[in-house]
Length: 150
Image: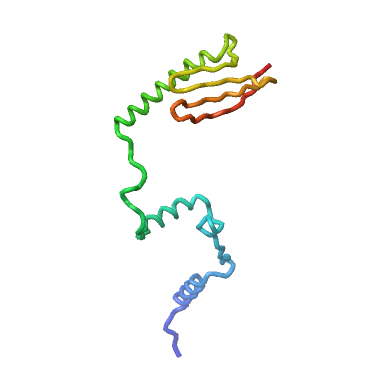
């Protein structure tokens, strides 16, 4: 029987066959690495997974009232009034602090009254002062104690 392939073609076919079957030495183990941070994955993936889940969520709560979301951005007038109120309260706080400190910058015991607020400073002894602020309109008050340097 006569061979159809010459020796050069047979060598090339043998080389291609050997190259197409890689040796087992190059194989590696498969290692499972979780993606979800709840199961040990990288915490950076958490926000991405949550955003993807929220984007795919087609379910809505039937009992939720869409018109009563609870937040509406303030109008320009409301923002202006809030800023004005903050500035006025800052001025009042500045004038109050000017009258509750002595010339050395130490707090002095006493009571300071404004139209809306009352600030009471009581010396408890041992370098401890008790400060009580009260809103005259609502009666709400806040108390804290501080220690002063001897």
